[in-house]
Structure formats: C-alpha cells, structure tokens
Image (cartoon, rainbow, N blue to C red; front, side, top):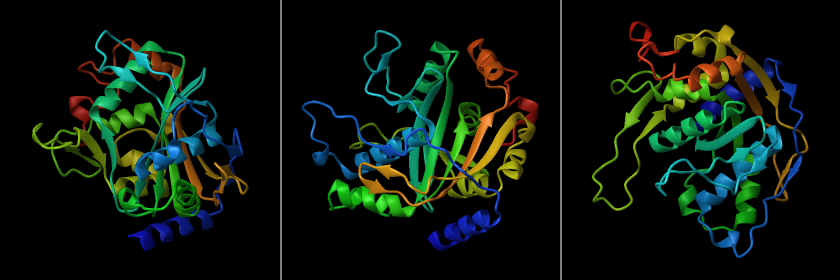
Length: 282
C-alpha cells in the first residue's frame, strides 16, 4: 500500500502542476504552557501536535489553547486546533492504508463553531504519512518529529462543506466513499466513539484526481477552488526539517454564501444543500 501511494504521489508531482506553497510561517514552535511537560505525553498526541504545527505553518492562525462552552453542559466544550479572525482549522493525520475518522461528536462541535461565527471559514487539513504503529513508538518526541518530517506523503485541505458532505454520507454500510462506525457497548473499556470513516481509497482519489472525485460524489467541481502546491523546501517544525510533499488545496468558491445558508439552517433542512433525497450518492 505504501509503495502504491508513493507511486501516486510521484505520478501527480511529475505532472508539473504544483506551485510552491508560500507558508504563513516557515519555522513553527509549540506554544509553551506552564506546568506541562510535553515529553511525557502519549506518542499519538505528539503526532497530533506535529501536524497542528504544520497546519499553522501553512495556513496561519494560532494554535488554540482556548475552549468554547456552547451551553451549560461541561461536556459541550469545543477546542479547535487553529483559530484566526477568518479561519478555524482542524488537522488530522492517517497512515497509508488507513481510514481518516470524522468523529460524530467532534463534527457536531465544529457545526456549533460555524453557527456561532458566521465570518470564519472552517476547514480540515488531512495528512497522509507512512509512519506505522504510532501508539507503540518508544522513542522520544524529538526523534518522532524528525521521522514525521521525512514520512509525510501528501496533504489535502478540505472545506467544511465537503467534510459535512462526507460525514452525512452514512445511509448504509460499505458504500464507495465512507462508512459509519457504531461504537461498541459502553461497558467496553475505552470504546472508540461513533464516527464516519473516510476510506483510504477516497483520500487517495481526492489527492490524485480531485475534480473527478468531486464529480463522483455528485457535487459540482465548479463550486470549488482547487489548487496544487508543494510544501516549502525549507520548513521547520520544532527543530525538525520537513521534506517537501504535495498539497491539494480545495476551498469553496463562495464560502460566505455557504456559511450564510448553513447558519440560516438550510443545511439541515429536508432539501439539504448537497444531499437531497433525490440526489443522494451514498
């Protein structure tokens, strides 16, 4: 699988359609938090931190330490990865051959953010890497970041409209793009939460052929801006050099119109913006 993904990456890069990405920051360090020792945190959490910093370097914003409480229930805390006046970002990573999981509860929280802030665009930055067995990693964080800097294969940046389209496509199991995972019994120790899993093949398809894949999802590619970049040739995360990798950047052409419709409640109406009963690709 890794060999196949590398072949896809090489083929896409050889097309010559990638422009250099001008980063907001070319050298990103983690914000220092008092009384917190990052060296003792779990390796998969450190991986998440790494890609949050990559996302900040690419697209700007601040790594978020603040949380939003959208009602009196303490369980309803929202912690976006990156925030700015115009953007709210979430970063996710997945190993080659693995799904990318959109946790139902997290999607609901991002919907709340979009409802509360109708000026900021929400996006998800997905990173595909070939670093296996992260939870069994025994090395230190410095070495982990060094490895991730060399093993990131590509990234796709998706607008929240497209993320919601994927997340809403769970009417039935085993369809082409995604499938829904239902959490096991609450009595199980640390059950994995309900989520929609973006298939590994879907991630590769969006990267390799974004226009054709958007059409296959019965969306109109003309509604999106699609750009192809190469990450900066000099890019540092917490002292670790990150080698160049390709980025497919997808954004709404009319984000304010989509946000306005979403906030007005049109997205969840029976005549859904993207998934009406007559035009449901899933």
